[in-house]
Amino acid sequence: MPTTPAVDATAVAVGLTRALRAAGVTTGPDRTQTFLGALAQLDLARRSDVYWAGRLTLCGSPDDLERYDRVFAACFDRDPRPHPPPRPTARPDPPPRTVATGSGIPYAPDTPGDDRTPPAAAPASTDEVLRHRDLAALTAAERTRLRRLTAAFALSGELRRTARTHPARRGTMDPRRTVRELLRHGGEPARPRHRAPVAKPRRVVLLLDVSGSMDPYADALLRFAHAATHGPAARTPTEVFTIGTRLTRVTREMARRDPDTALAAVAAAVPDRGTRLGEMLRAFLDRWGQRSCARGAVVVVLSDGWERADPALLAAQMRRLHRLAHRVVWANPRKAHPGYAPLAAGMAAALPHVDAFVEGHSLAALEHLAAVVRGEVSDA
Image 1 (tube, rainbow, N blue to C red):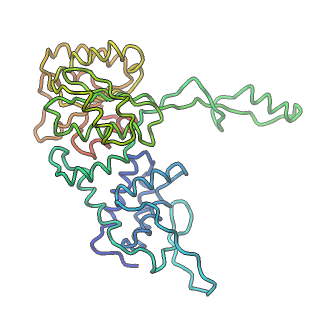
Image 2: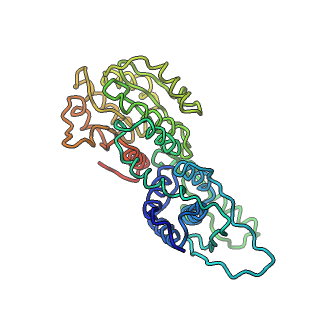
């Protein structure tokens, strides 16, 4: 079936799969290639074709379905649940053309009566361009569009092994369950039972610079923090702090479901706009980090590194933080600017105690930051 010339199947596949990865859905290159092959056989003007092709090829477990619907709605700005193809009538019809999918289920395209409106896939290429735009250069309409994309974001710390165990097919032998299995069979030989450690995501701590130099990025970064707190992958509490002339814990304000309400509460709680990174980092470590908040966590500092106070104090506190945390990640929106070098006194003082130094100027950069936090990319 011919595709609509104005729609690029590759842009649809790449844009949707990247958004799904940011939302916590594991979509590897094999699934993306299968999805792209399915799109080549379907009519991209049919929104339901794109929806069901992606659902059958990109979702690997039932837990992915809800995230897929949310991301599909954010990318295409429509109802994410199109009606399935109608049941065949009693009159015999020629067998429908099928497309092989990654799940092994044949897919039959919809009948001509289905929705054929082309806006289904066309916005994907626009979203792909928007993902790489600098947050400081966006128009009001682009910011509104970006907020819908950010709502589907997910952020979780890399997995760590805990002392708890659960039954598993492989691992160390579980003596209790093995003995119970022998008793259940009357002492006859039985298959040994195994157990494996339970994996749990590490705590994520976000330190957001809200000083005047970060004004162009503040709204987007705060919405990123809100999505990280409420996203589908947020299985562990995400602590959020703002740093300026004062340190403010805004985790409670971020707990509100509506992002606009949450950001209004944060704005009321954070009236100051100065920059004293070293002093605020010391206050964080003395009151929160030393107890348990930063210990063994992935700490993310989102700041341009401008420091009005003594850079030596910032270096000393970053050294403390590095000893407590599992990893320290610094996201700097200025890093993407041509010719950038970390020559600012604060940034130069902090950099030796940072495990990963990444960009933070666009949605694509924040998606990369999320991959670094999950431990999928090192960026050391």
